[in-house]
Length: 98
Image 1 (tube, rainbow, N blue to C red):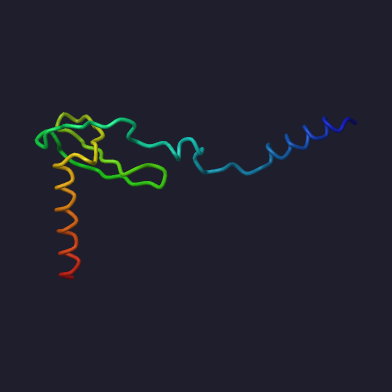
Image 2 (cartoon, one colour; image 1 turned 90 degrees about the vertical axis):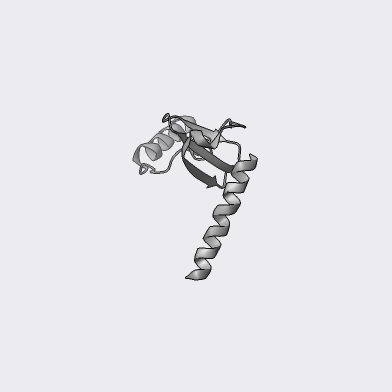
């Protein structure tokens, strides 16, 4: 039997009998949710904010608007920076109180 044919058969047997993986493909794991950000959006349009921080992506802020649409916000917007500083300050105070 040819060595190349034996190699192909061996590889096929390994692939067929190897247990299936539950992990996501690397391309999906490393993909960031926010690919483009909005640089200006009035606070009054926003219903809720979500914050995502993953090892492969920078800090991401997702705003759910009152219309139901979701947009990614630029985390460097001045009002958002002010909001984050106040939220962190409140968290520190509540942790010190406990």
